[in-house]
Length: 350
Image (cartoon, rainbow, N blue to C red; front, side):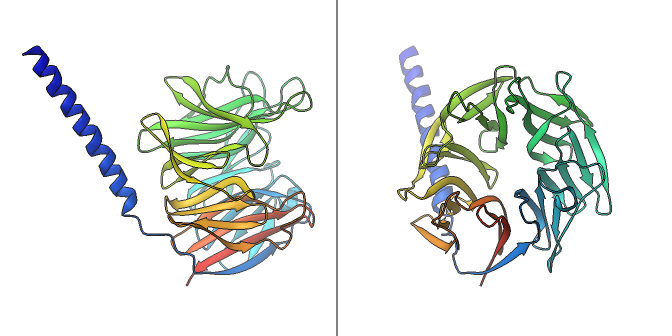
């Protein structure tokens, strides 16, 4: 009887696992192929020599970008018709930007401060320190709600490199610092993966000049960090993560994958050597890929270019540092190092 009972339990477990996998597979199979019939326009933001690094928007008529350059051009906003650039008193070297609505936008600055835009004015939301350091640099901000926000980056180590990891969490009306003692490097991305409620982060460890800079992906659970993947920070090798439809997608060199049952499940192997290990998307069949010579798109079946950069064959390569996607509109923050121009590529589906 005991043997039969064990066999029955194992059989139920296997059937449930197969059912879950089949349900998950069916869920992705039913997604229609992403469209590519965009009409593209290009705007130039008048902030020469000041590279913009982050972008967020609540709608196609409310887009924000940040820059670590000149103070009076460090924040730019698009109202649906034109871009304007300006500085905000007290916000020094803004970089991270994220929000939940047009009247609830957050910016992280170089001096450990976080600011909130309430639709009318900017108000200091936090002034954070870690281990007595106030020179915190926030690479990005992300959260699930205005009462559940993460700001992350690093502060300088003894060599001046930003390797002292910082992850701050705002919850229940107060800020706390996650224990990051066993991490070295700055956190570029930090997301919750909705399918399994696990947190993943991408960290960049600055090793130059003695060692190679490296990109590392960790899973965070039970107050511990588990290394999943690491590689050199070099085109073709580097790792990254992206949040697409509330699910974390992993870029492992030329492999794009999801993580299911603690295993990487390949979505796409990119065989184009110009792939630059950075993606954005709406779902598993609507993914944009940064290439050294332009922007490509995966629709669940194949990869095609949407446009080529004007200066696609020169180094340093043109970069896309941020993107904001809506149902009909896609905005990409493009920087040309050789011309020092910040360009906004805006695609609208026909």
